[in-house]
Image (cartoon, rainbow, N blue to C red; front, side, top):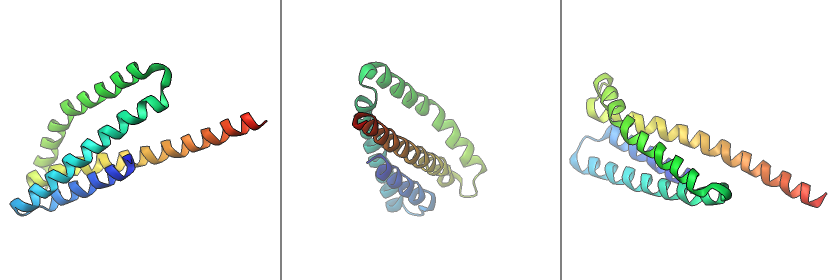
Length: 126
């Protein structure tokens, strides 16, 4: 689910980078907002499944990282907007880069989790 939401976030960022009308900017903003909300829900749904013994600490860490993102993203977007050819629209390249990085990390983690499940099943069978 997180991978799908990150892909939708990437699409929303691309729409915003190419937005040349009010309607397309509103559509891009809505797509990004929905994707970020679904990704957030997916992450907090995954925390109790992955860290059963320390749900509170892990949720606090994830929340802290979210707060850090809220602090760091606006200056990064301003920096990108000043250096982008398209100005403000180019700032959404930050979201595109973060969505791609998130997809890479989610893919790597899902492969690792799959291998861990196979090893656990093999240990139980032995």
